[in-house]
Length: 331
Length: 182
Image (cartoon, rainbow over all chains, first blue to last red; front, side, top):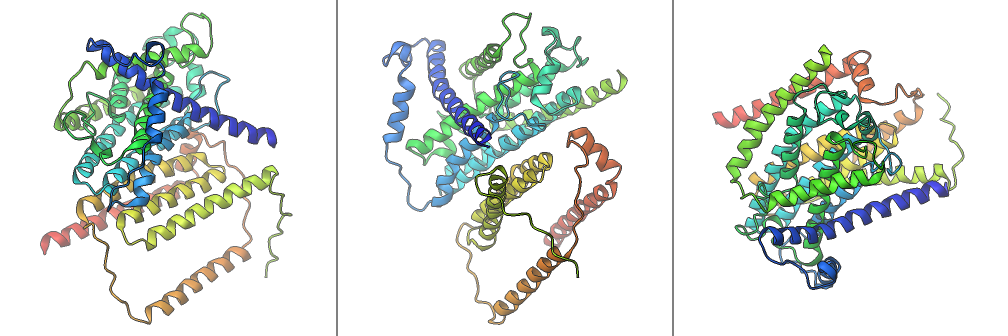
């Protein structure tokens, strides 16, 4: 008993630490990346390459007074940032980093991650509503309509992968791709996908991940330079900090899912140095792409954003689903 | 009268069974507290929040009952879709002021209490006196097996659920129609 209890506690602590550490240092990576793309130095004073910036920012945020404006709905106002961080940490429980490093290998792993990801929308709604600020509220309605719109093509694309793998267990999905680099789900010819449209589903999934995590060019919920700050206008200190960390933790989860579903998880390309670092390498390459896209593309409009999902991505992903089902039936 | 169900000896708190029981009780408590918040709060948005807490508690009970698939679907559909839709509707339509509850007739309280007590008592008696069949685990709970079972052995349940959805759609259409005509 004590061993199982200890295992649970260790798994939870590691999940929280991994999420928090990644969130903190992704902010640093984002700022350095932005600075590099915009030809300015970025944070470079504290520590080598400015590496001490995230802990100092954290201390600053935690030391600030928690201001709760008058007239807000206090319980929901405090619950919203917690609700933003909680699903991200829960999702880390079932993500397999390698064939041995996984906290709880669930048979419904894919479902669990999307179930908890869908709770994120509630935190946006509660944050906007409880602030009693009409701009925060309007922005949260925008953000949630965006999240709902992009959840659909994302789930449909995931179903194609689940159909090919015949399982919702994340470890099993990776193991089916681990024979060689050509067996990864993104490559259509070898492996068990046999589906010429797989690179295409990867693209749909990636676009949806960008939109689900509120990243540019789809960051209309926040739109830094146009709206004040979106749904978290009224939040200061660590309330704001939690929203910020939740956003980056969600990016990590999204990239983990892309790696597992399409890029073969921890499996190594040519049998070179098998191990957990291949997973981490793919993960951070994807995250670097996120940062790169954010600072290279201009923001879309809200109409363009919603049209892209409802009129293009959903029909395409439905077609993709039917095509995959037909291929599975034929072969 | 059937003999009461023989209860196993209460396990000590720090054994595996004890901890599992504790988790079960926590989930039940979350469900009940959520339901109370959902019924009793004055602001509609808080009711939705209570409803979400209640849904999460129910999902926990499902997980405890060895059906993680149903638990996750509960969260995905009820928290992720239904609750978001409800709060969207509330935020777009309802006034933000507190609802003013008119004073009700003095007879409502005692009658309500009586009915509630009767129903609760009836269900309790029913639950305690029935000889519950012990269900064995049908399969491993994988998606394929659940699909097969739903479309073969339990197809009646499947059809009935779709009838419930059909009734809901027709009801929504009827309500919308009445508003439009008046």
